[in-house]
Image (cartoon, rainbow, N blue to C red; front, side):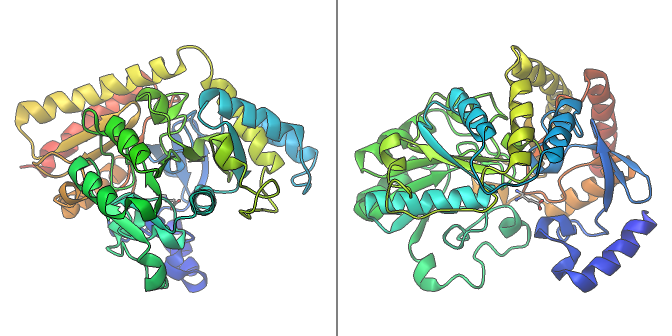
Length: 428
Ligand code: HOZ
């Protein structure tokens, strides 16, 4: 076990609640001591004791190119030498906005902010300002950052720690957030019939990845688009995880659906803090200084984050980038899947593109309730066996894992063999 991480965790707990700056990092759900990381390169993380891990967490999504990708590092270094924040507009904001818009044509206008949470909070305010309606609708188990209105039946840390409704959110506000199960069109239809006239926006992870990965049932997203349109409810795709992950144009390109609003984060900052929200020009016109919905940020469009984002997105634009990434991922998942099926193991491998979760349950996982049938104790055991084998997964059953382009087919073959050995041991 990592001694330095233990010492650092003890020290950190004296200074920070739970010893962390974001709850799921604390290993609360899997037990043990969180690893304090000192450096990362390509597919690997090194902890404070110098122990190396093959990393499937990828900083929770941003590191699609792998860690310390040379072109991204150079872009950050070059920009840092020219200043780290100006509080003025820069040309790079335009360059990044053009790259994002090229990938997401539904974002006719957009605004850069500093995190996915901030993007969602701002987009929700805008949706309310535009529609002049107060209620919002989300799916139970989906996570859209920690804005007050979104911490109702929330996934990610909400699911991990069993606090889907956070203390500190006034009931009066929480009551304005309605929920329906993901993949349930009947529930959505009934909700919109009953409350539609008061709902500003339906916010949805088109492919949820914060309760573990869920896949939309055939036709679900198309029907969601039609139903929201019918009721004059805006559709907001939260693609903080799926954006530039499932395809250059995210889930909306993969499933060919045009939402009214979109939020992005993670990958678009190449590992630096960033978020963006955008959508139909008619809606975005309501944002200050053009319109009456206020939104601002000292570090919005930050020069370091935009430099890293531009360098990252330019790599993702290369022809065949996603094809290669998905091919590698598919062979890796294929090896796991074949074994699971052959053995009839009580495990669900939910996956799409380079995104995946291994659920320890025999029933199909397609919404929050089915995700919650997973045996979290088995996941914890699995997680710690992986750690012993120098493999780092997300420290919670209810999160996604990521294949990065830095991982080679050969590495993934070897890792698949290790994972199957661990599963064999666990399932006897
Ligand atoms: N919101 C992230 C998981 N979906 C966790 C971020 C972190 O703890 O670093």
